[in-house]
Picture 1 (cartoon, rainbow, N blue to C red):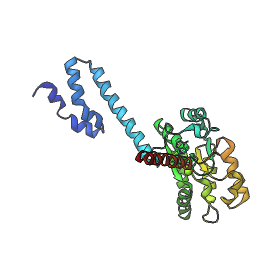
Picture 2: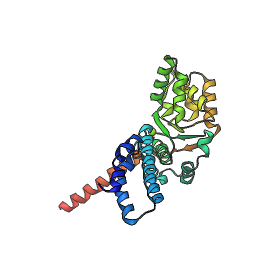
Picture 3: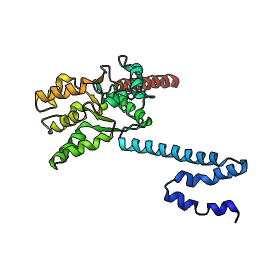
Picture 4: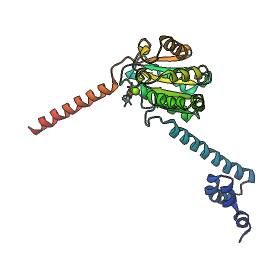
Length: 267
Ligand code: ADP
Ligand code: MG
């Protein structure tokens, strides 16, 4: 056995033990190049470590994306801003690129009727933040209320709310679907109060604030919740025509045209 191989015999085991899977699979190829080209030891070592660090970062982001429960494919790059003229793309880009609002625990609220892209837009912000190393959690608000209620029954509501602290952004979809007559929504208020000025919340709502008395059990709680949510917030008013309906109509029109064209051809 030649000298370098003798040194290498225990490498796979040690690299496994040290949890360095990328170095474990790549070292032979890189070592071959390094030996052939006479790399200084420093260059070899730093190349190997850089590969491990880069892979680790990719895996971390993948993990964050899968824990986030964000809908796949709802990206900033495929959101058509021309459909929502009063939403500024520059403003959204700034939110994605700057951390100040997350550090402040500021919020992002999107209002508008169904189908205008509220969920898509906020999910796209979530995806972009994950790309930048942040942690995000997306949930239907009703699902979260159920979960918090169950925690409250087991006397572990504070612990359940604290668990959500690991997320820089909590994205509550369809906030105003929650109804106080269907569930006990005080837990939602407790969540908002607990995250206030510490951790950000993003939410989508079909109903304007004036209808939120349906959500919380008492008017005072509604006012207090809104007050905290809007204190540091970016509010997006998306009062446009449904994108869903518009694109369905466009497809229909296109198909009709194609049909007419085919019929004409037949003659
Ligand atoms: P909302 O949450 O307001 O009800 P969604 O975000 O679910 O609306 O949008 C409905 C559908 O239309 C989704 O498939 C979404 O990807 C698409 N959509 C809506 N607005 C846009 C847009 N401006 N650009 C691209 N796709 C859009
Ligand atoms: Mg939606």
